Length: 147
Picture 1 (cartoon, one colour):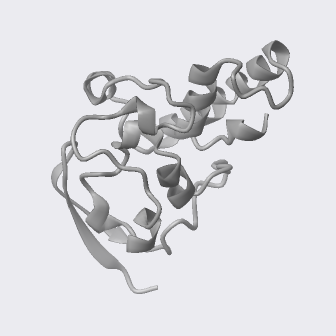
Picture 2 (tube, helix red, strand yellow; picture 1 turned 45 degrees about the vertical axis):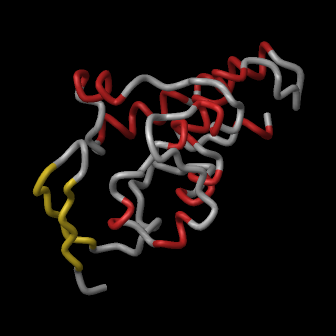
């Protein structure tokens, strides 16, 4: 694949450039095995519809075909479970949680512990049990709708 240069100018980064050297949605870190694809996450309204709203030009148009997006502030009613289960972007920025690196992969793996907690606390397929925890799992690409 011939690299294509992407320039990022969004709320988190200005003037950042990277070479797109892998097909979109492929060639992830070997330990990153999400249950959900980006288009699936967007169709579930993750992060109150604010996920990837200011960087759409970086990603395939097809990812946004069924996306539930909020034009203004995040709207928890757009989330699959209809609850607020995320921290504001300001918290993520202050804690340095944004950058995709080994630490983010570690955080993704560690978030799996919530699946075991749901299985211990909830009856199978009881989607009304722990909706905030289930929504948070969706934010991390774990499909909690099937637990």
